[in-house]
Image (cartoon, rainbow, N blue to C red; front, side):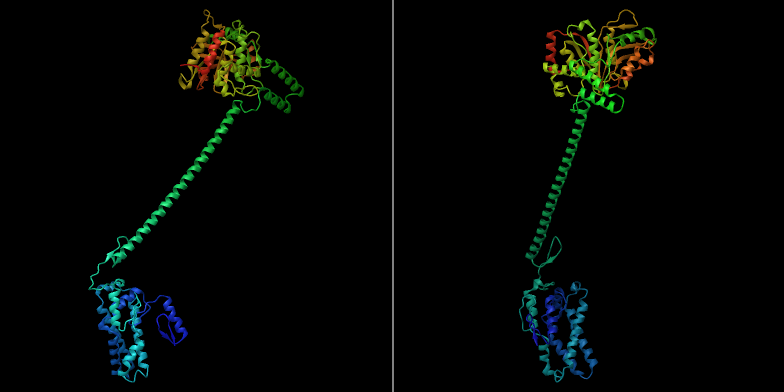
Length: 577
């Protein structure tokens, strides 16, 4: 025989002991009165409450079983039937003692398990009937039957052992009433519902601990939520910072590209000046077969000589156009009521060396060519010739060094020589003022007519030239110098204005972008009206947002030159309207 070290039960073989130990390992609960097992804790409590009251004790049940057995010992069927009736009566007694409302707490498979229990009781009864020793007499076997079938009851909660099942039942009900699902009816013990999950507790302190667990869990979840929110906020901030960094980087890149583009556009990209560009263009012409190498070297020598002495070589100049216009208007133009022409002026067009950026320098050459032919300016321009573009750049730098237009000098890095930097109205004004030529800048900063036109500009030019009208002559050759005209991206020279018979006005403009071969067509005796299309600009042809003009008005005294130099520290143009 083998004895269990956990509960003391004896078995006959090792295989039975292993099966018995599996029961302990699975945590099965065994009834301390009848050794019922195979049910959970709640079902066991229900079983103890209902099956082991005093009126249904094991002794009484077995006395009834024995009595029924010996009334008819020869009939096996009768014995089985009687045993079944006894167990059924036990079950009925248990059910009758259990409160009606407790049926709701009975598990679905409770009936099946109790039927299994009753079947086990029948099996025990059959074993008893088959035993020869137990069939010898009823008085001698009643005690041993109970002793072998039932061991001393043990409390499933605290392990206490009682001699009688009634004592154990009372012990469980009194000492462990709070652990039973159904409290004693006569205790009137209050029940406490959990306000969070609805769990019913019989002890207030247990309920308090249970609620504290809910609160701890809630606090932990809130903490996790805060950690999650904090993590999400940090992630969002990092993403925003990364996006801002990329945006700023892209903006910086675009600014650099735009700045480099402007530098190239205005000739400040350190790609060389007039001489370098002229040489590159001539080399390309040689490579394309359009220029003979000997011609290349001849032109290069002439260019180097021109730059060395600072005088333009005159290869882009066209003279005599004003005289040709006088003849045309006097003899041919029938739709013109009156025309005013400036003093004599030569046309200069751009060459390979200044193509794309030299219009301001070429317009200065045109203006200076008119001033050099006017005796009024002979004193301040004494000994001067038409300078080449590198020389004009040097003259502007000298004016900056004298103190003229410091803001403009700063914008161009105080350097023009060796660059392709554009110049505009401010640089023309600075250069003329440094030469003691009296002039002023007028700014037509916004449109004064429909569709973005500038009729006030035309009116101002008309008043400028028409102040010297002599009699009723159709063609008026004034002594007024031409007017420098600047707009965004280009500059030209106004050499006159015509008034048609319908009172509309057209400016006569020299464009440095027009080559000499086109301008020389005007020198023919039979000039056609179509040839003047490149000179005539009506109100509808000038629609840039803003225009500036530089108009020459005479000669400055040394004192006036100093005063204008001081005034140029804060340079402002006269605005019309």
